[in-house]
Image 1 (tube, helix red, strand yellow):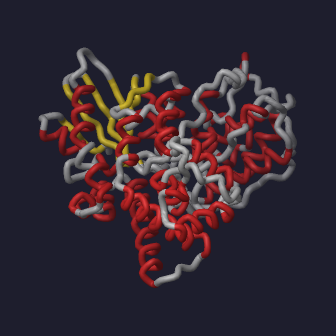
Image 2: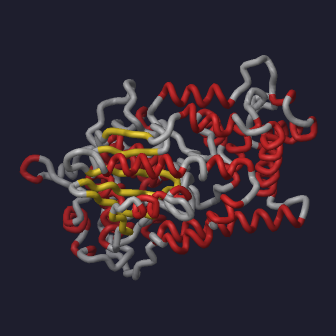
Length: 454
């Protein structure tokens, strides 16, 4: 478990309704980048990390190039393409633009891809991976910057995936009313099961839209600050004053296991810690290096493309859902989430019931991602079982769905009723899209045309 990830979740939006964090939105201190439109995919794929602004315009190093080619190799391997004997004799790999092209080409040359036999320059230019300057010159002998190498690697992955009609399709619908179009993407607020890259149909729908709408505006710094204030005690008490001594000691032990100080979590409320522990327990070895939740990817891609950002809810509303949970429920929620994370980290659980719960949770999340990647809402609905969720006596479930779905349906309808001709993109949790009471059927009942994107 990466300590930086724990701190990122604690510092960001912790609610189980969102579980995501603004990433790669424009920051005043960042250098001017010509490849800003490539950042969302590059970050999601692991080609850059949180410190990218400190090195992205420097010359790429051989060590960095090796890391990039590993990312490319791993992503191409997931496609299970027919292999070939790569003729890479005489290809020089170094930190010039030509050397970087050769390094990336070698990964693609291991597979039977159209045009790969034509060599590095011809193959990569045919895919648009490298594009010449004035007069088409490729400047092969010039030192390559990290930014240039990143763009080549990112373009290569996306080009091959697009050529193979591959990538995660997501639960994507298209709603229409007159000349207005509203794309509806039901998201999962996690990064795992090799979810990136997303299918070109999702990326194209996003780029075709003028405004992108989320549950919350992930760039609203005042809202984020408000939610963070709700997550912590401000009355002079600490976590130890609100939960049992036994549960508090387990939190202390978990903090140490995560590489944190024994009292680093003392100011956080039980619901905030429970949400964080739950998020951590749902990640596995397929989670990307940056653990970029799907909502965060969509947000980064939208912001970096200059899209207007909208939200259907406020931080005060969503934070209030969790902060209003009863003391008893918050303690039970923390105990449950902590038990699961303890089992995930140790590989064992204290009771067979806990072991069964862990297995069931893993099967559910894996099934959800499989259905999501295949764009199969029927399969998703069977695994997710929203009926059972909203019919349970769990205090949180009714707040998350029955009290929120109608507002999301109305918000979607409002966009479809906008005067003129517009294209919008709404990305909210997939649980809000599916039935019973979901946005898709809700809009259909209101008379709008809503169809699954083919």
